[in-house]
Image (cartoon, rainbow, N blue to C red):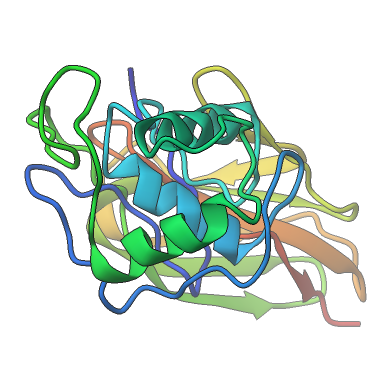
Length: 225
């Protein structure tokens, strides 16, 4: 199953393979989290849980607390002998904060393999940087870089974009402008036929050769009058 990864232009989210990464500098959670919530703290939890394929096999870092995240939190609670309610409440919050901040893991994976160890293929999402937009009256050019070869798509609309989580992917609403199918580390997409003096919502969706995806958090740009 391919991994679909969500990241913002500021917060970069990815899955690391082979060894347990250090979370010594990771930010801890400042609020309780549950189904339906969203934010960078949800992304942080998803990134942490996704390092262990036994806890979170889908590995989606979307910033949205959906059904897969609820299942992963439930697995985390079962492993740590916390009531498995699928939300990060007052009992789970201090334990997951401790493990996120120190890199400590408790228990073993359900397959009996030490937690955090995964020996599969590429599960690292592209890291997106230098995102910029140049606008004109009826057009815009969106450009960015990635740390590995990837393709790119820009979703845009005059209405807020809806980002949804399905069984195997993360999708977005709106019009779509895309580059060619060539994999590269520098992308630039020209969007034509826009309305002058209009605010547009947009996000960038990049995919590497292994199907790992990074999606920026929806933002806006305005065309010139």
